[in-house]
Amino acid sequence: MPMADTERTETLAEMARGHHELTELLDSLDSSDLERPNTVGHWSGKDVLSHIAAWEVEATHFVGAHDAGSDEPLIDESQFDAFNEENVSRTRDWTFAQVRAYFESAHMDFVNACRNSPTVTPGFATGLSSHHYEEHMGQFRGMQSKSGN
Image 1 (cartoon, rainbow, N blue to C red):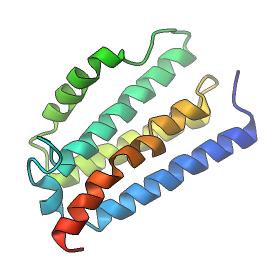
Image 2 (tube, rainbow, N blue to C red; image 1 turned 120 degrees about the horizontal axis):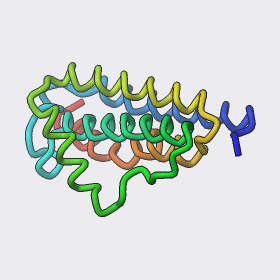
Image 3 (tube, rainbow, N blue to C red; image 1 turned 45 degrees about the vertical axis):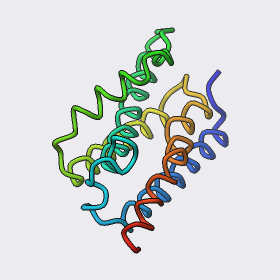
């Protein structure tokens, strides 16, 4: 069942709030802090942002496929680690600026898919955007305190 107009507006507003909060935090950090290896386990902050972007790219493809009639699931939980490592390793040699542009593009594509989709649900849209960002905000905030900002 399609989202009602008010529900879609509220969902898009929550996605925008989450994006704003994340980008404001990213803007407060130095790219050198974000590119420093092994600051989030074996990932850098840049890798975490790449991970977030990869999920939004995957979510955009999922929404398009479901809008076209597919009933395939997003990704089985047993494949999460492999998906994450494959996608983060693909951007490992990128600069933070390149990963940031990738994230912004992925985010806008996902927002547009959610804005226009007859099948997307609020929980899916916010789960793969604002709620996902919140899962990682503490990691970015930890970098902020280490950089003295």
